[in-house]
Image 1 (spheres, rainbow, N blue to C red):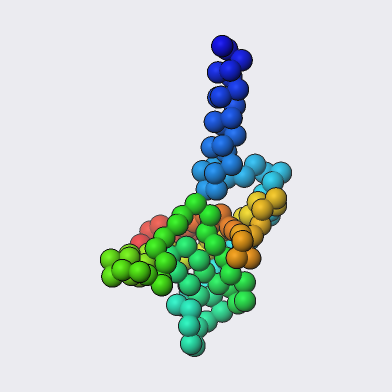
Image 2 (image 1 turned 90 degrees about the horizontal axis):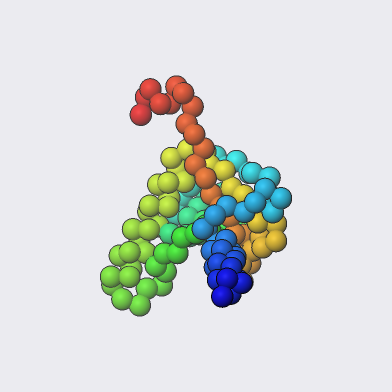
Length: 135
């Protein structure tokens, strides 16, 4: 009975650690952090180098980045309520990205998704001490 319980526990741990966004990848499987700082616009005509596609995807030039660990409603919504949620999540991601510099890493063993978007874990950098005084 004990070996079966140990096997179940190990399988459960392996599944949880394999979930995207559940835990950061171990150091030996993570890329070197890339620091991004720029102003994000909405993607479309006249967009800037940095732009937001939807609530979980943004672009840096021609490179499309999918944020690991979140999934939002799609802009091509099938109902009005979904369209409202898609717009809200897109605005939220754009606001978060424009709050200041952030760091991105990716797993070396799975850097892209099936749509060839870069899968990235995104972290907010700690603000400078002088920024803490002037919110």
